[in-house]
Image (cartoon, rainbow, N blue to C red; front, top):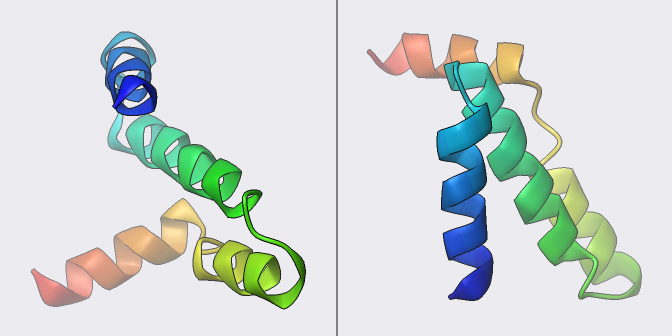
Amino acid sequence: MKKISVLLIFIAITACTTQGAYDVIQANQKHTCNEYRGQQRDDCLDSFSQSYEQYSENREAYD
């Protein structure tokens, strides 16, 4: 819960753009992957490897 509160405060202060918010969330999720080891960690990191540009294009495709 404390991590989420810190993350939300950080987003509110620093994320002036959608990309800024995306970058902060991605960084937090990648940090969480470090709790795993080996292939599980690699798979976790791979699941959060999408760039903002790719995310934005995919998002626009659904809108």
